[in-house]
Every structure is written in structure tokens, then in C-alpha cells.
Amino acid sequence: MTSNTNLDPKTASEIASHVEEPSQTELRAPRRSALNVLGWARENLFSSAPNTLLTVLAVSLLVWAVPPLLGWVLLKATFLGADPQACREAGGACWSFIEVKHRFILFGLYPHDEHWRPLLAMGLFLSAIAASCDPRFWNLRILAVWGAALPFCGLLMWGGLLGLTFVGNDKWGGLPLTLILATLGIVLAFPLSVLLALGRRSDMPAIRAICVGYIETVRGVPLVSVLFMASIMFPLFLPEGMTIDKLLRAQLGIMLFTAAYLAEAVRGGLQALPKGQYEAADALGLSYWQKMGLIILPQALRLVIPPIVNQFISCFKDTSLVIIIGLYDLLTTAKTALSDPLWRPFYIESYVFAAFIYFLFCFFMSRYSQYLEKRLNAGLKR
Amino acid sequence: MSDPVILLDQVNKWFGAFHVLKDVSMTVGKGEKVVVCGPSGSGKSTVIRCINRLEEHQKGRILVGGVELTSDIKMIERIRKDVGMVFQSFNLFPHLTVLENLTLAPNWVKGTPVKEATETAMAYLERVRIPEQANKYPGQLSGGQQQRVAIARALCMKPKVMLFDEPTSALDPEMIKEVLDVMITLAEEGMTMVCVTHEMGFARTVADKMVFMAEGRIVESSPPVEFFSNPKTERAQQFLGQILGH
Ligand SMILES: Nc1ncnc2c1ncn2[C@@H]1O[C@H](COP(=O)(O)OP(=O)(O)O)[C@@H](O)[C@H]1O
Ligand SMILES: [Mg+2]
Image (cartoon, rainbow over all chains, first blue to last red; front, side):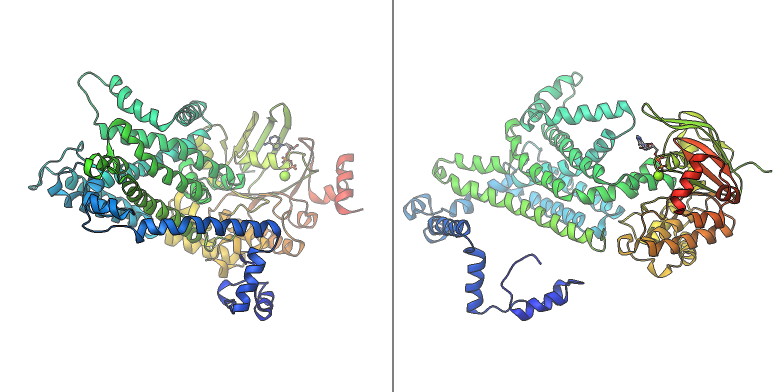
């Protein structure tokens, strides 16, 4: 039982009789009369002096914040078709700014008439992500899905074939760019992080030293400087005349950075497993990779879903730092949309819009991790 | 006499500066049942864990089925295929069902097709008397049932020898018998076995040889009748006195 709801005696005794095998679905929802609500409030909101104080504080905070917020977002806001002048007079949020600028914020400098291409590519990309989230696809099928989706996305984004005009990736921007950087960053960083974590626990001193060195170095510097190095230092090491695309450099930087952090999360899972699991796998004659792939990692990764997803979310938001090497990710386009002198005052709307999109994705990841934990632990009582 | 299945020749092992095994020599012939006993910390687990290289020995030779254990990983994996091991704490894989626990190694290590591996697994589950639990997860079974699954898991690899490291010490008293019964049946069928156990009733029934260890040495090695009625050393007398409650 998670809540200490004021249950009526009958329900309470039902619970008592179920203590042996608690089954949530069998419990009847407590009846709520007006009296019950009062009782609930007394028990949960005013049970002690500090509790009462906190309740009063929380309520006054809501009273202070909610009405003005509601006024700005809805009541005094202007919606479709309003010009900047009308917006300023209304005094609330100017949502017509989003109406006018949303295509630039979403797609950046991508040619206006071709916006259907990144839109379609994003649809494909998101479908592939959705498929990856379904455990039924956790086999070779997932490779087929991405194998089909990625070239298609590439074709749509770049074009240059089948009558599609060519659009260089210096023109890419907005949400597609953020999604690409984050997803590929995560997808590529994950296997690398598993290898780094395994390497850090390896018996071979050279491998261990390399992995420890890598992880500690990368963790010791901020992403901003990794991106900076990726954009300025990388080219210095390349042979004369050879260049690596700026987008690719940013992508590599994000991936290499994320991998170091993920590796530590994965290592936590490896360490949490009892030694007996390693020994049982060894005793059966499994090779190192069989042991890791079939026995250790499936259990270890399950244990560290929360920190892993945490890292995914963090990676998604950190892609906004590519602004420093001049890429137009979602946050940058939101900011650039404001350079239009007509609409300059409406920066809050612009950032709220971008924040809302970030939130949607991050919230999805967070809910998905909860679903995954439940699903993977079903039937696995330790 | 044919070659011994296991041969330990002057085996020494150190944990850091601590000398755990001192000149341990022992042979186990085909079909022979050896019971290893001795006070806690005397190195019993370490000896049998050296036999399948869960621990590495530093001096002396260990041969399993005529093959010497070296740091060559291919040899180690080959030997492990032939050596089944049962742990005190079961060590079943909790994320796999009982059946998957049993078929995983035959399938991946020996390349047995899943269908055949499943048939073998079901046959062994019958033998340890829990075929109805095949699709449950280990966490849903009692300790005694888990240990029987662990025995079946080792048997599914068709090993030449089985090692048991105190297989009943983590069990509640009422479950000890069900596990020992399975082990006795196994012994009667002629399996070569090395058992570390304090179950002296079991030892009397099945052992061909008792090995008594103290402080990293084999102090006595004799047939059970002799060992129980007339232990030669004072250490063994003391130990038997304590364990048999005289
Ligand atoms: N991994 C290890 N590192 C250091 N000392 C160990 C290790 N494993 C066991 N020992 C020590 O070696 C001795 C023998 O251990 P063990 O073989 O487990 O004894 P037994 O099984 O007879 O109780 C004990 O003193 C124990 O503390
Ligand atoms: Mg022991």
C-alpha cells in the first residue's frame, strides 16, 4: 500500500485479510464521502504543525502564481492572426508569434518550400524510435528498422536524388537537427559505453587503463569544451586537405561525451550483480562474451535503467550546446527567430515553445523508463 | 586402472601473502565419489574451485580428463564443459526461466539445437522431480527446488564429473533431504563426484573416499569406514567429535 488514505473499516479489514498475498486489483477503491475528504485532509495536510505550515505555504504559493500565469497564457493572450501591435496592447502571451515563426523554429534555415521533407524524415525517425522502444523489436528486426529508416531520412534531408533538390547539412536546423544529434548520440554512445564499462573491469591492465583514462578525462571536461575541441582541434589532427563535416564533428563529440557518462552508469550495474552470477556462467563454460551478453548485461542493465535514462535526457538537452560551433538546433532557432525586429519583444513565447518541445520528449523518456522497469521486472521476483 | 578423471599434484595457492593450499595432492577415478570435509576456512572451497579454474593455482599441476589446466582460456573452457558445479548459493540466473537456465549453456556452449536441449532439460527436471516448474522464474521457487534446478542445470551439460560446494548449507532443514536424495541417486548412477559437505550421513552412504582438510593441507584421506570409526589424526578426531555431536 502506498497511500495512507483514510479507509473505512470494511476496506481496512479487507486489506488485513489480504496481507498474505496483497493483490492491488482486488482491493476496492475506498469510498469517498464528504466526510472522508475532510478526514483525508486532516490526516494528510494538517496532521502536525510543520505539515500545516507547509500546506499553508504551498497554497499561498499557488494563489500567488497561478492566476497571473493563467492570465498570461490564456485570458490576456492573443492567438491566431494578431500582429505585434495587437499583442502588445493585449498584454498577455503573443501566441501569434508562434504561428508566424513556428516553421523557422522547427526547421531552421531549411528551404521553406521543402519543409515537408524534414517533416516526413522526422516522422520516419520517430517511428523508428517508437519501434525501438517496443521490447518485441529487441532482436535483429530493430537493425532492419533502422537500416531502412536511416537511408530514407538521409535521402529526404539531403536530397540530390530522385528529383529532390540538394540541401546541404549546413542548412539543417531546428527540431530535426536536435533529434538527429540526440538520437544518434545516444544510440551510438550506448554500445560504446557498455564496452567502456566492461573494459574498465577487464583483467587486462592495458585495456583497463585506456578505459579509465578515457572515462575520467571526458568526465573531467565540460561538453562545451569537447564540442570546441571537436570543431577546432579535430581538423588540426587530420591530414592536409581532409575535412570532416561540422555536423559529423558535433555528432561525434556528443557521442563520445555521453558514452563516458553512460559507462559509469553501466559499471554501477555490473558491480551490483553478485559474484555468483559470474562464477555460474564461468562454470558452465560460457565464453567471456556469452557470459556478458547472456547473463551479466541483461541483469546489470535492468538494474540501471533509471540512471541510463537520466543520461539520455541529459544528452537530449545538452545538444543545445552545439550553438557554440554554429549549428542551428531547436534552441538556437528559437533564439534566432527573435532577430526579426518586429517580433523581438516576444522572447518568452519563443523560449516557452522550445521548452515545451524539449519537455514533451524528456517527459516521454521518463515515463518510458518507468514502463520499462515495470515490464522487465514482471515475473522476476528476487 | 584407467586414468584418473581429476588429478591434483602438489597444488599450492596463495591469496596475496596468505598460503591457502599447501601441497594438495588428490586423485579422483572414474565413478569415484570423494567427500571433502574439514573446519571452516580450511580451503575446501578453494580446492574444488581450482578444479574448474574459478580460482587459479600458483604451483603444482591440476589435470582434468588428462588435460592440464593452464592459463590457456580455450583449455579452461574445454575443461569447464566437462565439469559441472553446484554452489552453496545456487546461483541460478534470475532473469531466465528454469527451462532457459537449463538450455542456455548446452545451446550456446555445445551448440545443441534448442529443441534437443529442451528435451534433455525436461528429462533432467523429471529426474530432480520438478518438471512442473519449468516455466517459472528461479525467484518463485523454494531453496530446495532452486538447488535441484542448479543440479539439473549442471547435468544438462553431460559433465564427466560433478563438483558440489556445500550444496545444502544454505537450505532450511526440511529441504536438505530432497537435495541429498537427488545427489544419492546421481551417485548410484555412477557419476564421478567431489562433494564438500558436512552431511556425514550422506558421506557414509555414498563416499568411496573421505578427504579431511585442515589449514590448507589434506590431513587424512581414507575410506569412510576407516575415517569414521578410526580417524588417525587428532584434528580429525576433534572435528568428527564436534560435527557428530559426541
Ligand atoms: N578471494 C579470496 N581472497 C582472500 N582470501 C580468501 C579468498 N577466498 C577465500 N579466502 C580465504 O582462504 C581460506 C580458505 O577459504 P575456503 O576455501 O573458502 O574455505 P572453506 O571452504 O574450507 O571454508 C579462508 O581463510 C578464506 O578467508
Ligand atoms: Mg567453503
